Length: 99
Image (cartoon, rainbow, N blue to C red):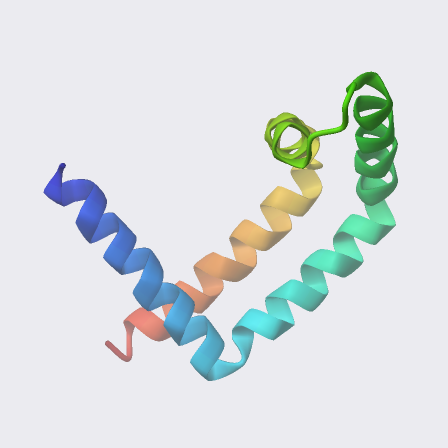
């Protein structure tokens, strides 16, 4: 148990609450969906999920999710990651002034 990870979790929870309260969370989600759709990432992830599901016998959802999580993170386009990082930093800059 480290206080650093607890305070980090608290900070993330506060950030999430602020994003939701201001409506920015829904805006970011919509932007993320658009960027991912334009990048064909969703299609690639679905194709990988189908390949992995066919390879499993029997199909086990927890194992499938465990396998796809790292794949999804690894294949997320840099352009999407960078665009969302810019938007989150902008939100933080605007809201840290209010805190």
